[in-house]
Amino acid sequence: MTDLLLLAFIFLIAAIVVVPVAARFGLGSVLGYLIAGVLISPLLGFLHVDVMAIQHVAEFGVVIMLFLIGLELDPKTLWSLRMRILGLGGGQVILTTLVITIACLMLDIRWSYALAAGLILSLSSTAIVLQTLNEKGWTRSEGGQASFSVLLFQDIAVIPMLAFMPLLASPELVATISSANGGGESELVGDHGESLSLVEGLPTWLALIVTSAAVGAVVIAGQFLARPIFRFIAATRVHELFTAVALMIVVGIALLMSLVGLSPALGTFIAGVVLANNEYRHELEANIEPFRGLLLGLFFITVGAGMDFGLLVSDFRNIIAVTFGVMAAKVVILYLLCFAFRPRGAQHWLVALGLSQMGEFGFVLLAFTDAQGILPDEMSDHLLLSITLSMLITPLVFLMWEKLIAPIFSRKQADREADEIEETHKIIIAGRGRVGGIVDNLLTALGHQATVIDYNSGHLNILKTFGVHAYYGDATRPDLLRAAGIEDASILVVTLDGKEQINTLVKHVLETYPHVHIVARAVDREHVYQLWSLGCRDIIRETFDSSVRIGRSVLIAMGTSPEKAQRISDAFTELDKKSLRRTAAVYDLFTPSHKNDEFIRVVREIRNQFGPALKDKLSDDLKDD
Image (cartoon, rainbow, N blue to C red; front, top):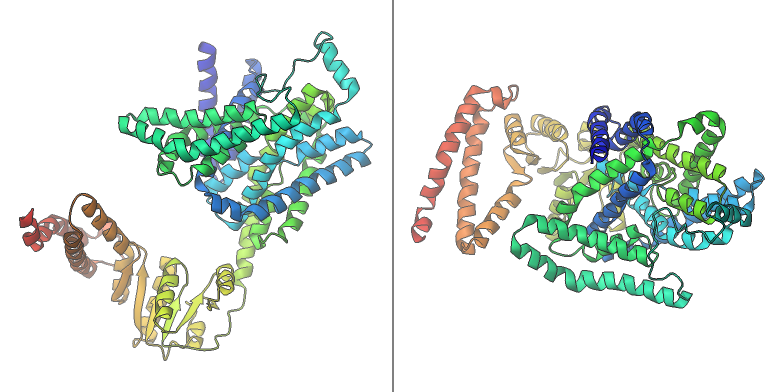
């Protein structure tokens, strides 16, 4: 017990000390965990800790992560990614394996060793890549979706690789392993010890039926059994039971997939997709998320701690050459493949650089090759260190993309010449994103034409495919505004994203073209005061109406009639607008709100008066209650 507590304390203190420092310097949590592992490696060696055994436990974090990813994807979304999964993912694995195999053959390495190395090194790190994409908010980007497609194919490809690799076994290595095990048949069945199997010894056709039945059972259970079970557990109102059920589902599916020879990560991903439309999806996510984070953090620490620095020093040149040679080859292959599968510009490089490392499934395959006599120990040790080193480098590669490459493409976009505006209208819309798009659609549906300007060239290219016409350019530029016909326009709708951009445009137009009526989007309440101080009087808070509607829905759910709930919402909105005018009148654009004494006094006064004023306004409705 003491040993376990000491080990847990070492890992926790390393994470708590190093990860916040790494995050503070913009290095990300993944690199922080890896560095923490490297720092505690000597201590773990002194204590004779089996780092690889801990890593196998921590790999369950990858299983949980893929389950959570599956929950975010419904079958339709997954189907829409099929071409990228098969084309981009399949092309990457096949071409990378081919290139590495040829390179090994040119170095006079035995063909079976070369092919095995190519298969192992073709895989990327699902754990590091998806964790980084999620942490940086890039998962939904074009590059993030393409990266996920490649990783999903790789996870699927591990299964046929495990089935194919025994054919590459070297007779002399098998004899050596047999001798080491007492001359009898080897009892090694894989580094994870999957001695239990539902398909071992079965004919191929029967094993295929059993495997298909297992996958079918997961799908059927997710569709028909999950809801009744969740309802039953929810009715108990015992929160920890829901956590237990969530873990039971993930562990049970992972176990079933292991028993039929499939990847546990793939099985839980399928289950997540099946449960994506379940009403308890968010509850599942909330209960499992902490386990994912802790186990992945532990996994990254073990990767850093597992580096063999003695081997790295003794054969530094060859290991560095293999590591960077494979990463460079994968970058080139992925970069070329991306031309056929849409990611462009910075997103193109995000896919190519982000997937250039080798991955944790390489550890699994290397353990398998050791057990089956496929690769010699010396070559296996070198490949293991190259995989670990590439994973350690990956967060720095992502950092290079974020700080160096992405800004270059942003500048290129900024340097693009503004479109020549061919026709002008009485209405100008500055910004056609989420808000401006709805305004444009409404006006177009009613037969009103507007001159639409937006600064996101990629977004405009997508809109063009749907027949939406808008001009590329920076609406805050005076010359572009004149070209758009601001002098003859009657209405300017400002729906840009940034506060500063909105304020700059509003201020310029109010001062230069006072005849133009401005309808401005306000990001928040403070922004309303800023626009009011500039002289704008038609200000729309982007989340206010939806928030009031949510409140109205809550009242209806509590038993209030829809008509009465609407009257309450209208009364609240009217009082809030009056309050807003009072606070805006004492707002000082050059004094922070929390230091403006008069502003503070008025806000406190309004807070004290608002409730009684609302009740007084709704006195007739409240009497009915």
